[in-house]
Image (cartoon, rainbow, N blue to C red; front, top):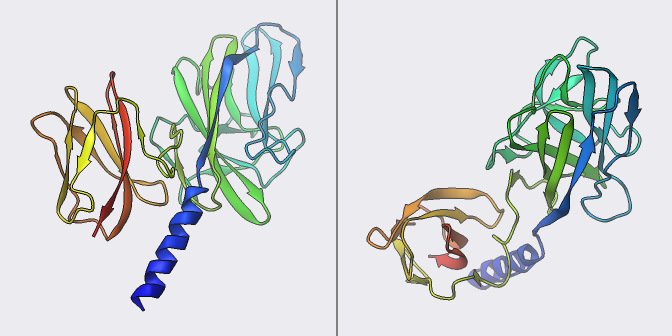
Length: 271
């Protein structure tokens, strides 16, 4: 029985090694100019999350006169009701719903509230509601359907007066698995990533706690499970370098530690 369980865990982890968050930076950032009046433009920046040749999301704007504008995120190049956006639950006077501006680390998944679909495209902002306008960087939570299963992702945008800037996007390539806004991946990789090559984690495997050596000052940490979900987070430094993991179920986890000088990601076993 133990051999069967071990084999199952091994196969699970092998599957997770290829189950990654796929991150795409937009470099240089793509800017949509809304300053012209009396016009509209569609299919401005196609996003094909999984590179299957089908556009999952796009963008459209309409500017009828000064102050009367509509900035939409659309599902594909033509309406696809299966590609949806997290919404605020409110609508403009034309009955078009507003997309929800998400902060970093907001969970995007099946349990998220407010999934919306709209032939005209949910609104990032318009003359009735600024919505994303002036908030700085915000995420749009999205999901798209492939072979009957949903894939979850995010798009990072910044909306200033007369300009929408598209900065990056990512999705979880395992179906029906949630993603956090801003999560660029790496938490489920086969290889540990230690950009300083100095930070060490011990003991590994662990039963009660893990400690870190080689830290520089105060750092923020996150611990991910095999589904890419953050299950613990906090602050750690050179003197307070112990993280309690005794409450975790046995299995493999990833510890991500980051400050302005370091970013380190390491796997460890809890048993």
